[in-house]
Length: 281
Image 1 (cartoon, helix red, strand yellow):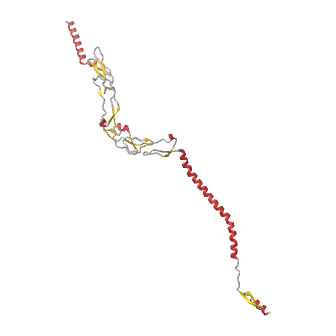
Image 2 (image 1 turned 180 degrees about the horizontal axis):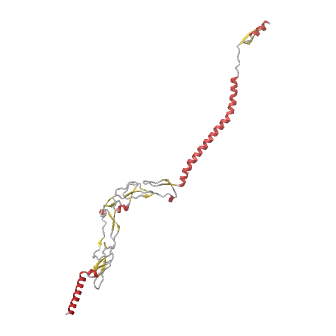
Image 3 (image 1 turned 180 degrees about the vertical axis):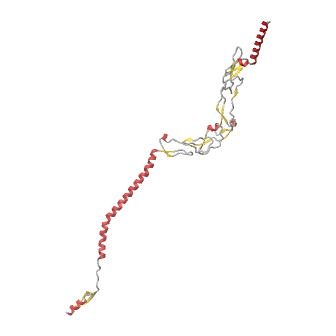
């Protein structure tokens, strides 16, 4: 009787242990992240680009097959269907940026001059034109920005109003062997010129100024030299005239006719007394 009781207790313990193990079947199975549990076994998942056809069993592993054309599977999976590629609808303003394959989906983007209407980017809307001094930024349009325009940074410019034109770099005068004539702005490019022309533009005004000064000096010297030469001659020529003006003028006495010994005699006024005395003698 004691032995029977012991055997009964042992059987009951084994039965309880079996029941407990059956109640927690997952405790006996520990699968990796590239596997999945199926009927107490760890079956392999299908690698990216494939889908599951059948689970593993006691004799065979999981059976997988490549995704059909136009479908993809990006990760390790136990799914029996691949995901279809997105379609870039032309009437929604979308174009293909990157074609899909068995492991990646098709990537769409908006046509030039448009940007995504929302975060899902299922449709596109027209961009507002970027005014002068602002450029279109493709990355901002792809990031669903409502205004994919930004001011042109130092060294760049945009001289048009456009939905697609970015800011352009200033022309490098140095790379062309030229020098900067007019510096660029955010709305205009740099204007270059030849270094020889730049030198001439500086030398010509300086040369003109020097020549003008020399001509002025020459004219001044000629005028003063001529005055010095003419000065003594004019003084000598003017002195006789001054002397003539200083000499007293001769007084012309009136002439009278007088008879002397019966002959007429011409005499000047003031000599009558002499003639009268001679007649008396």
